[in-house]
Length: 212
Image (cartoon, rainbow, N blue to C red; front, side, top):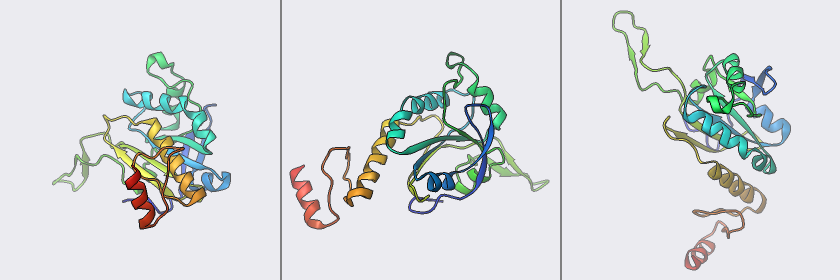
């Protein structure tokens, strides 16, 4: 189910913070109450291979997201305790020590199920019992959601598990959306902060295309 242009599901989920405290987070309420955008990054599992490279990369860019009034939150179906163990493991040992943003612990998979981002490709029904059998780990793909200050999703994307994300693209999308919010202009292909945007009319589009 696509959520772009719609409110992100308002549901409270357990989370782990950098201090080792298990907390509760409702992403929509966090965005609205703090008047900030939210980047929610789902990844398959703690203590894996591509996942720590992503979490460290977004941590390194955290100040740039904060400059854009954006909160970064990680998320997986691991428990808070597993998150804390991973947060306490040094980077050289495959851990994410030094990551300071919160990590959702959707271990009951309530939010992931609503979003439809769980890997269910290898599900089958057992003929004898009627039970659903899963060959995999029932974890999420690398799903990403950008949510605005009113709790509305303005970008979503899903990568297959082997494919890590590009931090710069999320910064670019946030810049483009802010430009639209402030100036009401739409942003053409490959737009970056400082480049020309367009009004939503045929003359503006034609002028932009002829100039580029």
